[in-house]
Image (cartoon, rainbow, N blue to C red; front, side):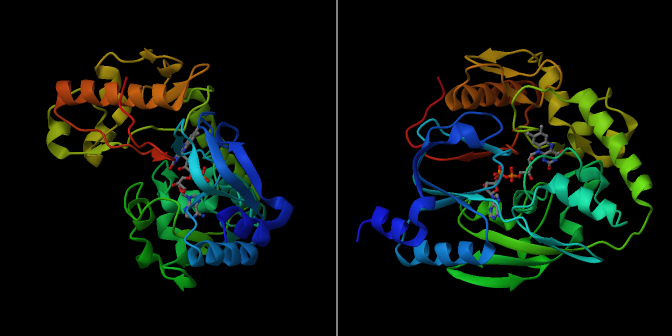
Length: 324
Ligand SMILES: Cc1cc2nc3c(=O)[nH]c(=O)nc-3n(C[C@H](O)[C@H](O)[C@H](O)COP(=O)(O)OP(=O)(O)OC[C@H]3O[C@@H](n4cnc5c(N)ncnc54)[C@H](O)[C@@H]3O)c2cc1C
């Protein structure tokens, strides 16, 4: 049976074809997904993943597309967008992976559970947050995770946090062929209690800091990971004491020191406001953005002998692509 008939049989009218992925990524770039489905029920999702596995149908699982650079060539398979948003809030909070991270923060704060204040302003789903161990202001999601329900190796299973192999902006899911192993839901342990107003006030402070530093133009957040390199820290006397103590050099510091703020490639630009944000300044293609990323990496390598590693993930078909 051909792929379209199998998918139509499993999804009926909910299956869309030739969906522009630029509509589903915060960078607002990306070509067509040959097939597209928005999943809103986890059990339905697990069933469709099993169908795809059984028939060897290529699929790419996405959340809000806020950490993705989707290729101009798009994706020749099924893109599954995650809209599974169920939650049960408590000390052991259950969250389906498609709930937005911001919404989860607000729900937990309202119930008097602290610990996710830093998550305010991080766009994206809880699933996307787990994949990259999202974090900010010294908080990360990894340490809060108690269990994860995943569709991995062709079956629906529940695993402990050690299975995820969390580290700085990383987990095993970033290494195992992105978007194939799917997080369906998770439980987080939230032990600190506080007044909702106090929790919200702390979060608003983080949000104000974020607004002051980050550009409004379409982006995927920090494009590169910060650099954990004590020897490099020693070579950079102008770093703040906090950065020195942590032994971490912000990627934005290195990019700015190369004089790259404002650098353009087609419609892509290194933000004037924050050098680690590569923005769609208007009409950018995915190729413009990736070419710009290559130029940034080359300049930083030449000046500091450091190879920046992308925090943003390249998705879709990039075969045969070369920087302009
Ligand atoms: C303005 C801005 C600010 C940001 N600030 C921060 C920040 O402070 N800290 C931070 O860590 N990040 C930040 N980000 C990056 C991004 O928001 C996070 O990485 C977010 O967690 C990604 O979630 P998502 O649902 O959008 O994932 P997507 O971009 O849709 O997907 C990212 C990757 O995860 C995979 N994936 C998504 N959901 C699942 C799932 N359920 N199961 C398996 N794989 C899945 C996808 O296949 C893809 O490989 C920022 C982004 C923007 C645009």
